[in-house]
Length: 272
Picture 1 (cartoon, one colour):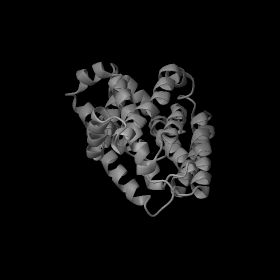
Picture 2 (tube, helix red, strand yellow; picture 1 turned 90 degrees about the vertical axis):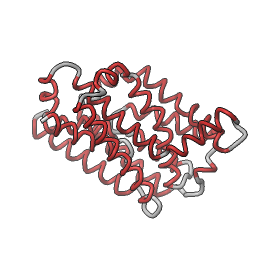
Picture 3 (cartoon, helix red, strand yellow; picture 1 turned 180 degrees about the vertical axis):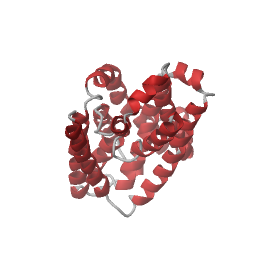
Picture 4 (spheres, helix red, strand yellow; picture 1 turned 135 degrees about the horizontal axis):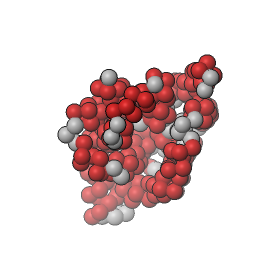
């Protein structure tokens, strides 16, 4: 059963991390809907933490592999040429834009884990509200800014918005893409910048558990979760960037609202 759970959660993580639908909300809700928390808990040890780390390592690999050339140019130019090139500027923009989310995580992640992540109705509210905002902003914002023309102030604004993703249901990719669209980014530009900005955040979430990674790196279950989320994540990034060249975010907004309704319905049918 654990193998099946690892594969399903790997798929969920690979999709949810990059689509604007909230990976944290989906991981919580899928376990809650199918009663998997008790199954995982029965195994004991640190299997829950190890599996969560594996999923994040997988999506980190996905974004690094897909944007390898981009990151190579960003890092090389950022370190050697500073702000003299577009790539160098973007590297330091991304570094600075990561800080607000990182600080917010250090200050509030523990409290949010304790008081919010176990509340399906709060997660449902986050999904629905963010879905409505995403739809409205995307529908009413122009597409006048390409990735190459993003400014420092814009990246910093998106960086601060990313801190809201600590709330399950909001979605890191959802809030950063929505903010990008609010600023007039093209849909594809908002997605690409969101993915690049995700890299250090996902890396931080994974590296925070370095001991677990070292201890479980050779575990078949750990590898299954990692490989599944990596492969699905790679496919998801590629398809979403192509999809947004011709389509809007409406389908994701609708999905968020429908999922929120499902969560509320199940919650009250079960009597909480």
